[in-house]
Image 1 (cartoon, rainbow, N blue to C red):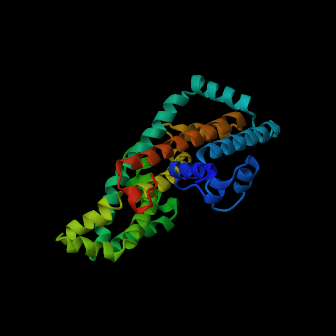
Image 2: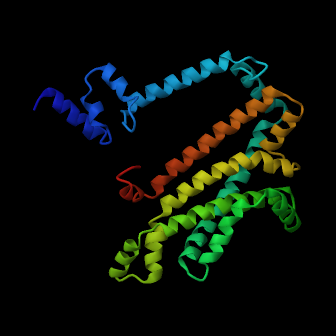
Image 3: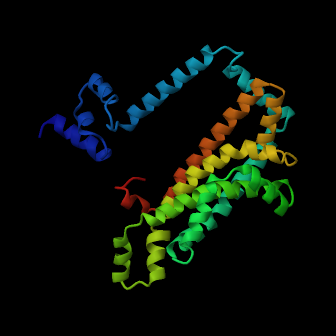
Amino acid sequence: MSEESKKRDVAMSVEPSLNLRVANANTWGRKAIAAFLPHVPLPSSAMRVITLVHIAIAIGFWMMIPESTFPGPVSIVDAIGKLWTENALGRELIVSLTLNFQMILILIPIGILTVIARSLSVTKGIVTVFGNFRFLSTAGITLILTYYTSGAHSLKLSILVVFVGAFCIAGWARMVDAVPQAERDYMRTMGMSEWQAMYETDLRGRASEMLEILRQNQAMGWMMLTAVEGIARSEGGVGTLLLNSQRTWNLDEVYAIQILLWIVGLLIDFGFVKARKIFPWAGLREGGKK
């Protein structure tokens, strides 16, 4: 075995998903060409370099944009400092994060109930109806929720749970419908009851997929936060602060809050990705992906 073949085998053992074309590349030029080929995975070190290049290009474009159109990095940092000291940005952020996390905690048991209800013929149609609520407008539903809730916090929370929950329910229903019948039959051959088979295939077996659906849709709830907090402003929140800055046409503060919301949203999403480690068996169905 040649030395080059040994290096290739070592590279493949460290990163099994590494493409043979990349593993065989012996020059930086050939490796760079692989970055422009479709569906060719690159080493993690190469991906870090590409990411840094993208960030540098984005910052360069940002600094070239006129301040009258989009505030520069220095203006954004100054605006965040001003908001933090003069407008209690930290407190407003805690209010918004609390609302978002409460929505997530409420949606988790709703997801479990959705999976159970979807597996029963008597309640299968009800799940479809709730999932179709995602086509409703917020205007009429908000009036109903205002009547049945007490206080700004409960109103905002109910709006988020209803509309984000509708999209989650639709996703969880499709997940249950996509479970192969062969998996359920296999559980039955092992002597399990219908309820045990449902638990192993639909609930325990799809827990990571349920989390992924919640992850995708809670991001939409984080995006809706500004509009929801604008409906009931008495409790405050980052959305209220953003709308107030927008009303006074303070672009520095508007974009500073937007960037802060974006960064916090990415951190929440990263937390969901790491939470998949709670289900170590999830990667078995996905070819060993973590």
